[in-house]
Image (cartoon, rainbow, N blue to C red):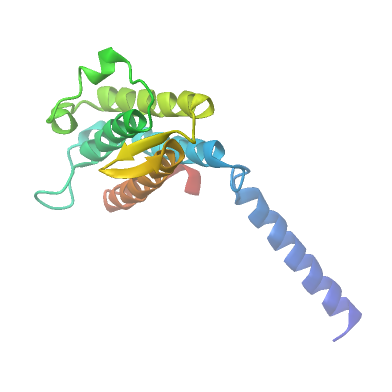
Length: 176
């Protein structure tokens, strides 16, 4: 190969890597809170991007609707925080009933539940005693293990939300 071709290939590879590195969120690999913040930001941005009239859409009968998925994330955040030993404010805990996931249907209310739950996770994590022993679904665990479940749960349902959004013609805002 000629020196010129090698230089051109090297420049193309370098430009490709530079373009790719600008798409990679700086939070990746920066720890639990940074990863949670990224998932929370993406989930909230996607919820904001979905039109209000699509919050009742569901892919099939008996499957959670768009709005129910976001409420499930929010309620899950509060439940899991409680399992990790975080005190969920009484005014929030009192509003969580067996049907809350289905009864809160207005987009602004759902977005508020979602973002408020994310904020409580975000502010609770740095103060949590991660080594604290807790019972989690009948098993011995640590608060750190429960916080890991919060992160995984948020990512799981963010992925579900992406699939829902694409099914109704909404492109995730961060993928543009």
